[in-house]
Length: 411
Image (cartoon, rainbow, N blue to C red):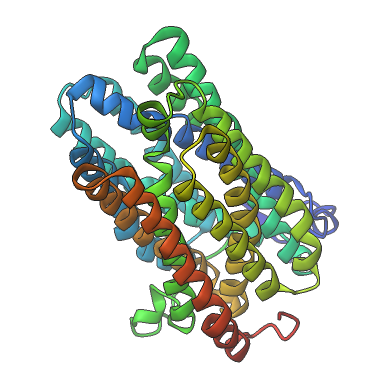
């Protein structure tokens, strides 16, 4: 019997097309991911400035407001993995993406800090679900022989968004001084991402009927607990850094329009390392890529904390980008490698949940340290946490992964 796609017969050429790395479904998933993160990153570096200018929020309050988004992601992601593994993934993705782009309208009408904080927190719920569902759909669209490389390339869509969106946002704000324009642009980009998701055509997937008793492993990949803890260290560093780099550059280094360049350089590092690292991923050298990435990032965070000069501000961005570009795809492949095929959604949600925990704690910790200590304390804390994560990866996580991998080709 012929397979059906969203209720329609599957074309005879679909099987051959599905063996291609760059098949149409995968390309649509990548494009929607780019638009999703473009809408996210066009606002991220400017939100502390917006909260200061619009609501006169102090650094501690900024950390509280901005961390709500991440906390909401954290709450929804374990359930997202369970839902994505249990129901039709395309339908789940469409539903979540719709609510994600609609939420941008709330920023336009938020007239008080409390209302903005509520909307920002609610917005984290569909974002957390969309990132799990979209990456799982992308993995489903990849033939098994291209999966490791495809996962690495999929992340490039994030990196391209990170490269261009902050620059576009900062340029628009510098030209207009109007945050409402940015909110509307984010809304339009997110809506375009929803259209891309609508164009994805996957074989119909029936809901899982014979459910096993609910257990923790249905919501979090317990086989990967140490890898999850390790990635949390790295997300802590990024949470401290990413939300305060713009206001730090403005207040301490006198860099008023260089934040876009910072993210552009960081994204160039991410882009270059993912292209270079894809060869190692194709050969299954996951732990080697992860260790290389953690060491490069450690150089970047240490340089940023140790040298308060514009040149270090930009060079550190390159090192952090190169490091994360090696590290994150390796960790994502490691999570997939220790999960069964019916746990891909759970594996995706587990690494993203771990990242959310670190990001949320990092934003809160960064806000407290900047407000009550100094920027130096905050960024040195990030460097020390990166060191702790690097040592954990080298001495413990590598052996932990090798003992639990289901894919014998991974190392």
